[in-house]
Length: 88
Length: 140
Image (tube, rainbow over all chains, first blue to last red; front, side, top):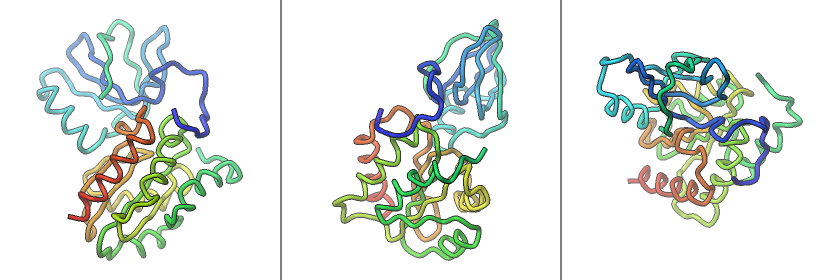
């Protein structure tokens, strides 16, 4: 990483990165990864695609172009719902 | 949450030293973007070390020794100059707010946008190339 002031050191590798979390329910979550706790993954400024609401890749394509709507300032994806993570 | 100005000042200067004009009030923004003619870059600065720490030097690199710069170079500071940032975003149409981010406008319309998610983890050299490419695209 380039020089620059990091104001929130000590977090995990994905901290601050915009990710796509697949939910085992079929929901898809996109937002900034904050941290993973026992209760689940904490995301910030997140959007959620409900199961079957829209084709996932089409939705992700729109988010890549226009950005991620901050529908949830803070969102916790429960551990039991967590089905995997990748970058947007 | 706003940070102490003493801490933020160097982050402002990381950008303004390259000839980028900082817009700190709603009036500043409206005067700059309200009747924009030609091309412009608006850099949305941020205290975030993860992303903005790489974005600021990339902006500087893109503006150095480059004849293809936009006609107007502006910056607002998210989380610090909240009203000005919100007003600037009102000119970005359907593009969602994120910081840091960079909007490229031509005659008042956004023609290209680099979102925070494209900045995260991107090396400043690579990001500088993306910015230069956007300058070229905006000029067409």
